[in-house]
Length: 343
Image (cartoon, rainbow, N blue to C red; front, side, top):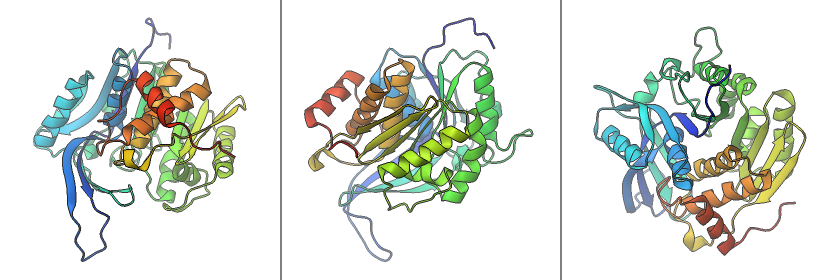
């Protein structure tokens, strides 16, 4: 399809979720008690987080979003937050009489790990029919999260699932596509994501997720080494027509392109007293990466911004509250420096 206008900006689609964030002393065992240190309600979910992160990285970049909200207090709060952040919200639809998707998100002060208790709410009603790209002028679609949307996770009009239908529609309207995942059981991830890989330009995911879809699963508490991440990324890029696969992990990230280029960069050496919570760090990493890709930055600089955005994010329990302009993120990274070079 030939577009009549210059495509610019990013559109996000999928999960809009109210995160009921609670910072606790530690994650409790059953039949035990821990103290809640602080709590708040913030926007969450892939479509919400990345849209806000991108807008904070560059307030001048057009950012729009597609999703479903309920007409409850959470839905009102999410819509108000989206509008206050400057997002284009005409496709963020409120369903009467429905409860907004929410998570009870607990972050352990002891380990900085997070645990989510999820209620699907309006995510169960999202379908490919909510995604009309004919009059969308964005350059990139960021879509997620497979496994958390009942209708999209199943077959749709002859396609393996609704995610495939949306991605095909976006590509036919000239958009580049990226899919965000969440760390569901490996078999479920592989089954949902594999049909989508033929319709993606980019895949920006973590070490657990790349291992799952490459058929080499690892445990949730097991960090894959850099060579394993590279092997898995190479496998995906060689078997499917993606332009770029980026895999991030606590120590850094690797990027593999369809031309055979491989780039790696260590993460920011954040002091422990600067880390409040990692909830949303993956979204912030993806936002930095997609911003660099949107702006045609060199891949090494794109990875630097991705890490810098994630580092900025973890200074707050909320998913987006601590993300700042892209230049300020890079300055923050420069202030604390980078971890040891990856081997």
